[in-house]
Image (cartoon, rainbow, N blue to C red; front, side, top):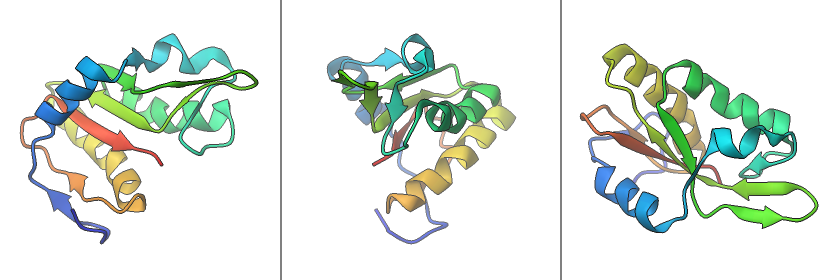
Length: 125
C-alpha cells in the first residue's frame, strides 16, 4: 500500500472483508449509528458521522457494516472500520468508490479500483 494521494489498487478485498464480516461482530450502521449519539472513527459527534456515510447510502450502498464496535457508556457506540457492500450498478459502484477514495488517502492507503468486488473496506482511524 502506498501513502500517496490519488493511488488506486487493483486488489480485490472480498476475502479480507468476508473474514471481517465473519469474525468482526459486524452490525449494519442503520441499526445503531442513527441513534443520535454514536460516532464513527475520530469524528466528534453523531451528526458528522451520519453525514460521512449518508452519501454512500445515497449512492446505492446495499449495506454498510461497522466492525468491532465499541460500547462507550457516555456516548453510544463507535468504530473506525467499515465494510461497504457495493451495488451491482456500475455508476453507483463508481460513486461509492470515489466517496471512499479520499478517506483511504487520508489514512495513508491506496483507494480501491472497481475490480468487480462485492465489498470495500473503509478504515477511518
